[in-house]
Amino acid sequence: MKSIINFWSFALLGVFFFLTFHVVAQYDVNQAPTEWKSPEMIVHNDRPWNIETPVHLLDDEITPIEKMFVRNNGIMPTDLDPETWTLTIDGESVPNPKTYTLNELKSKFKHYSYSLVLECGGNGRGEMNPPASGNQWSYGAVNCGKWTGVRLRDILEDVGISDDAVYVGYYGTDKHLSGDPKKVVISRGVPIEKAMQDETLVAFLLNGEDIPIVHGYPLRLVVGGWPASASGKWLHRLVVRNQVHDGPKMESPSYRVPKYPAEPGQKVPDEDMMIIESMPVKSIITYPKTGAMVKPGQAFEVRGHAWAGELEVARVEISTDYGKTWQEAKLEKPANRLAWQNFSTTLSLDQAGYYEVWVKATDSEGISQPMVVPGWNPRGYLNNATHRIAVKVH
Amino acid sequence: MAGDKHARNIIIFMVLITIFSGIVAITGKEEAPKFTSVKTTKKENKPSGLEADVKDGIHIPTGFIADANFELVVTNCTGCHAADLVTQNRMTRRGWEDIIVWMQEKQNLWDLGPNKEKIVEYLAKNYAPKDEGRRKLLKIEPDDWYVLEN
Image 1 (tube, chains in turn brown, red):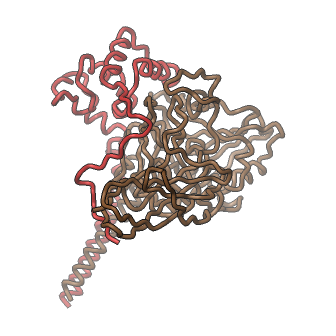
Image 2 (cartoon, each protein chain N blue to C red):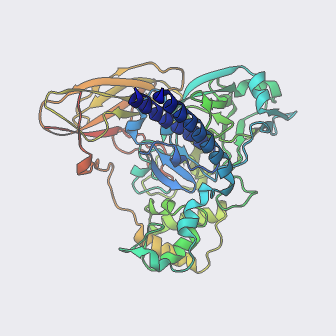
Image 3 (cartoon, helix red, strand yellow):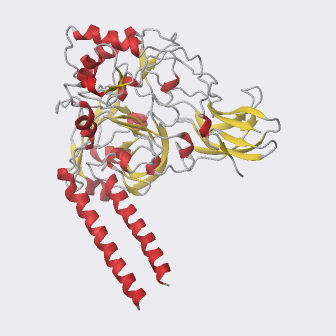
């Protein structure tokens, strides 16, 4: 009896410890995200924080927060009091600027929840040849979280915007790496049409919890299907512009690609670069983890997710012979528009040897993923080449 | 009876620990070094004696290759960002020049004066691109192969 009580007491103690520490860590401005992120995460950079998720950790339909990648451009803010936090809407196309407190936003507007794919525009940069500068992401700068908030459209309609509105830009409160307090780290945004979509949220919850600091606490603009840099963290101001927003990292070469097919390594003039909008069709194998060994004829499941920016994925295919033949996987519908879609199939390989399992998705307009790294561009964006895992049969 | 008392003591202990860790978490904010500068204070803010930290040709605190002029790179490049942002990249001479100019134009990097040439030289030599083709081979370390059970 005593030993049972002892066991459960210590088990409970462990859970208490974990929960206390875990929850505190996510909202403690002094805690490194690595303190509470999955220990398998890959840190590309700790100043600013850039952390990648190994692909096999992305198996869940809704990505758990501790398995979400981090792409920060500056130093995270430390002054994040939800009681005094405000969101101001102004800009050329706002005749009467308005400021809301966090509580006003939450109480005045209807809440919506959507599963939304956020993928770094530079996801896959590590395969660019010649190499492109920046964090050398492999395949794991993507996730699909469940965001809860109010529709940006509802806010803009409440504020009242003029007919000449073209773009919505965000401002956060992060600090520039150089320490210059007047310098804005990043201020990007989206065209007004994207801002007015049902799924474009000003969010305050992620997977049902307060958004952790590293992901934008207490308020984040969330724009699914576009480069995740369009989803501004620590959101405290939105500008409705009568021109394309021109905040830092809207300008070339940031988050832009050549308007025409460029030769690898080519110098592309700024004026020949265009802003990345919808992300391209892509898919990842989240199970099994690469490096699996199976027996000849052993049936094993292959599964993962596929997404296609603004579009839906129409088909997912798997190849075990370097793309010579493809077998179609079972593909589920997305939880909502702009969510990723689960796919799965069963494989069985008879002959002993080394195999690569490749996955290829095709979007609703018939566009597929390339099998080699596509469209070289100076900053290494939009690599949506087929994801591959290694499997040995013996 | 002894078991009950024991259990009560443990629960009291747990509650105390929880409160204590909560207090530590809250009050710790003031004293704890900002995580953004942990690495800086620990590793990179050492203007003198950089050579002392070199082992097997690598400057251990930053990971930079300890070739000629690496001290200039440590001093000028890690003031704002982690060394990883440099060492994970591979670029041609022109690529490194372009990124330095971009940092000067957009990101508050200071005028490097005559050191610019030395820094570009160091980066272009030690962090030059390798031709990896259209797709790299999948790399699985021998120990990372695992048996997949159904």
